[in-house]
Amino acid sequence: MSMHPGAGPVSAPSAASAPAPAPAPPARHVPAAIRLPWLHLRSRRVPSALVALLACGLALWAALAYHWWYGTGQRADEIPTLLEGCAAAIIGVTTHSPFGEPERATGRWLPFLRPAMIVALCGAAIGFLALAAAISFDPKEGIGLYDGMLPVARNLLGFTGIALLFSLVFGGLLSWIGPLAYVAICQFAAVANYSEPLTWASRPPADRGGWIAAMVVFAVGLVAITIRGPRVRPSGE
Image (tube, rainbow, N blue to C red):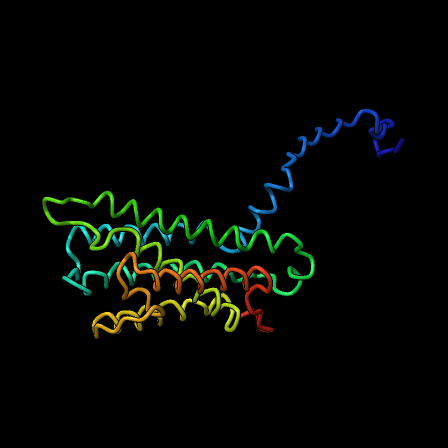
């Protein structure tokens, strides 16, 4: 007890009379099989990449519906091929890891998460482009992809393989240079009527050599990025 001038004794509050703290809410247990892939996707900015891939689909829809730079013959594929290269560039950038070497040292699930993410993004990109082509398709007005969806899938997978290979050499944030530069090469080859399997975007839709070249490049890039991962610069880019 303490005494105050002109007042009687005052009792100090006891610990027993203090209100009990509110119980903490129970922690939500998220299984590691869900939490780890979600964290991997967020660290690679996959939600933003999906928005960008959707924008590529919208651009294809607008190009078809409003006849943006849509010529005849080989020139009819210029805008779709450019958008396929843009989609591949977006996918390549998602290989960049913000954690660098520490993640490589501790991330034993990386060899599984890397290829799964790439394949899923390729499927999403092809799906968005196919949806755009289907919505804008109008045979009466002559609106539609010149060669259908076969070259879209072939070109996108091949360009993605180039992006993956560039990420091994230059890093994920610079991997977009590869597919966009290769799009330009394929466009020049198509305009000049120069057709080789390695310039698969200038080949007919069902051309075996073009498909083999594109799939080999995609497979090599996917295996390499699975095993090694993108180049990590000391500056973190």
